[in-house]
Image (cartoon, rainbow, N blue to C red; front, side, top):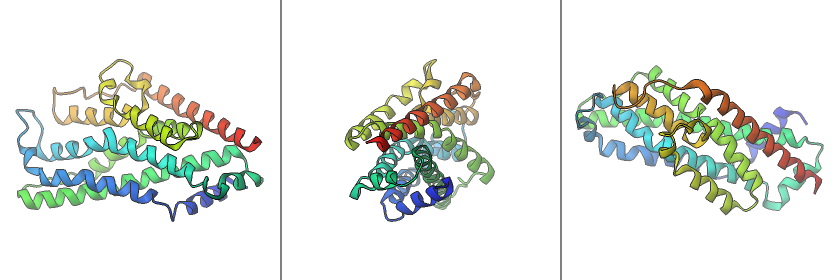
Length: 256
């Protein structure tokens, strides 16, 4: 079976699932406080940052630290659970299907779901910024190129983390343990970005990039330079290793 055919099959499987709601609802929840507390963006305690930039960064802070990782954790588990009902995974593996292709197709679906959440996050940001602008009589709306570029980089940085979470969902059979491990790994990311080994911890990548943007918007508060080395090669290596382990585990399923 061709890879694209597998991908379309996997996309059809999630149409009736609750994964889309899990991706969308947290985005709405995270931006409601930004609207309600929009006036606080004017009180920056002598930090050299404009209210509109502060609105953007504060709004995405909760997303990058917790909501993006948490929705990835839950989405990976739900993707694996769609195969558990009525022995769906055994039926798929009984077909002349490459386990490697099947595993990678599921991961691509996870990436596509993340892209969908990114697009909805951009839409929700602009809706929130427009509402806040009307309430505070101040323009909180930033340039679309600036917003789209920064949000895109945040979600691209989440791909290695998605690979790790996908690996956990494949390796750990019990969903509650897989979710527990994933959620527990999110907590220390804020602390780890302040260490020299932050680049080895994929769960901290999106938050690290947001803090870089914070440093650009508020000079002198945080570093405004991205340490591409060794981050870039290490992130690629982590992604590849996580996917290799996931594919190997899928291979063992076919032998049972």
